[in-house]
Image 1 (cartoon, rainbow, N blue to C red):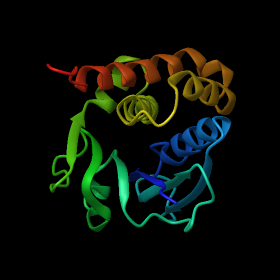
Image 2 (image 1 turned 180 degrees about the vertical axis):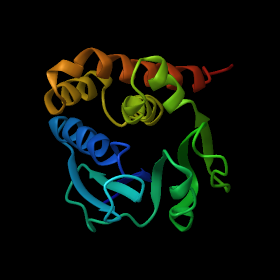
Image 3 (image 1 turned 60 degrees about the vertical axis):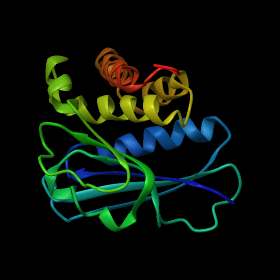
Length: 183
């Protein structure tokens, strides 16, 4: 059975695992099967961190990524850690401020201002949700309202406005990247 493979990568403290859990929750709520794994260096902030999702309509044949369809990179430290898993047709999203040397190959790579946008919203720690909104907007892997509900359910209520704005800002980035048919 075909599965969609997604990796969130960067450094510890960027909320990558949280973003992956939110997306997994939204996908499960849509009736999808999701296997999640995560890895991080044993430091509280700054070490290499990643979270992987295998998404399927049936049972996932293997719970670990082997060929990424979508890769999100929020820190230069993780920029090339997944190069061998990227194939033709993959979509790679990188933070334009923090990833100066993005992966290159036969895939689409977009550098978007996730951290800068989050800072403009008042909290650079919301870069993970800006990136998540962009990923869902571009990948169309779940309805956006399902992502909003999953975010509200998993995040503190006091951050609801910031989180909603961060997801919307990411979605707006995605919308700006989509080329209309015939255009």
